[in-house]
Amino acid sequence: MVEETISPSVTKSDGSLSRREAIPLSTISTDRIPRYQTKSKEFNRVLGGGIVTDSVLLVGGDPGIGKSTLLLQEAAGIARPDHKVLYVTGEESVQQTKMRAQRLGIDSDSVFILAETELETILNTIEQLSPKLVIVDSIQTISTVVLESAPGSISQVRECALKFIHMAKTKGIPVLLVGHVTKEGYLAGPKVLEHMVDALFLFEGDRDHFYRILRSVKNRFGSTREIGVFEMSERGMQDVPNPSAVFLSERQTQVSGSAVICTMEGTRPILVEIQALVTPSNYGLPQRTTTGFDNKRLTMLLAVLEKRLGYRIGTMDVFVNVVGGMRIDEPAVDLGMIACIASSIKGQPIEPAMLTLGEVGLGGELRSVSHAESRLLEANKMGFSHAVIPAGNQKNLSHKLNMQVMAVDTAAQALDTLMI
Image 1: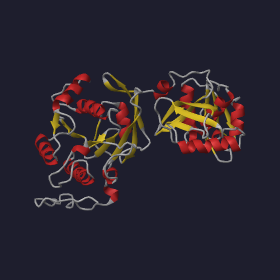
Image 2 (image 1 turned 30 degrees about the vertical axis):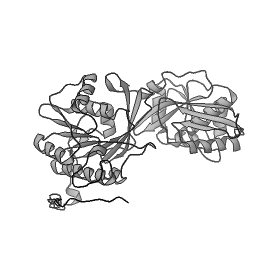
Image 3 (image 1 turned 120 degrees about the vertical axis):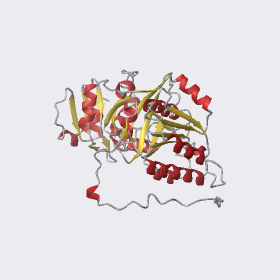
């Protein structure tokens, strides 16, 4: 329970939104929805083709992962003499923001920096400056005098976000909000904040790695399965146009416990290496450690390996890693996962030019996956000559691929084909 004290000087809304008349659905046109193109093609991909005017977007991620860096770069890329951008920083001074801009090689007369945490002052500045884009870093630091609670509280975050949304819809100014995350990885603040905004994007990746992934969680103007891949460099966040080549660049081909799978992120197929290490356990309880993969799904696949395929894993430690900082949630990688685990148990490497694809059921059967042809075309383009796929996908292949495609019905047949 949180006590909220409302100032008596609160005024009601002018009702500008409520004065709009209802119109028939058939007369509404969406052919020319104006969008602002960002400098980054990867960011444009995640946005769905650019920033829609009068939209409110929320970008979250761990501290230091690159949220402020990316948005400051995009502010400079969008800004023009007739296209002002207001960057509101509630966590840094204008000098600190200037130092970051100097490191990134950014210097623009059309990017305005405002170090302010009071909502009313920010809205007055927007009224006077009339920018084409507003970036707020971050929403948890902004507070309104209407409420006496501390900045970052549920009431303050909700009220400030509502005011920014009202301003964006009435004035046609898009707003990019930066949001903090908790130590569990969830967006800080009320859950209603995610419902209020038009789009939610989350930064993923380890700060010890060079690569960052911007994932679309919610998007009213585009796909919710798209990702953008960036590389953190001395010049800021750089686009990675071919993620498959990057994630496979340091792959060791003659090592057991390694397999290549193809995951679909929106409309983009990406080849990723997954690794497994299976060793006898020296403790009473075997360890099951995963990085970038769902631990519960790994437990299910281990049960299938032991029950249906005869592998004794109950007394062994299993460590699984998705290379490059990617996180994979789709079931199409099941076959690759059990293949690299079986490869580690037997100490036999998988054919380096082999792609594994398929969902494994509890009965050990291999189920078909979506976009199989797109995945195979991506693997073919990257030089893979063999692929093991579910039999259900073979009938839907139309293109002639320059690779040998082997269709199987069960996971046991797949492992025999892989010669493990």
